[in-house]
Image 1 (cartoon, rainbow, N blue to C red):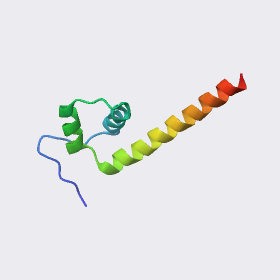
Image 2: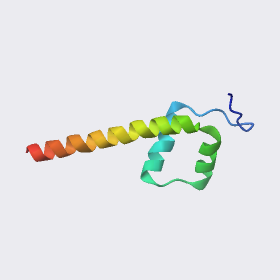
Image 3: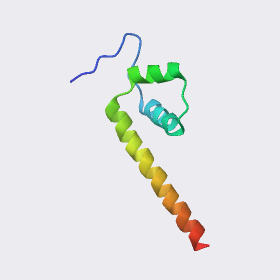
Image 4: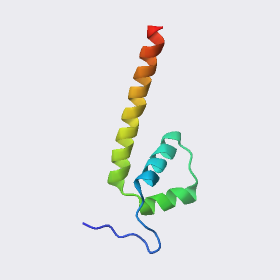
Length: 71
């Protein structure tokens, strides 16, 4: 299946997808940029990057706790 994008909007790059997920983790975003991301970014890419981001966040917290407790 191919996705159709509105005229004038190219598909989002991996960097754009990572930026979109990072802003979503923080919970701050301009509405205009959010609407643009909805038109460009694939939901499958968002899910994949979101899972990887959450995994990195959790592993970072576990490492931080182990480092603090070890001292």
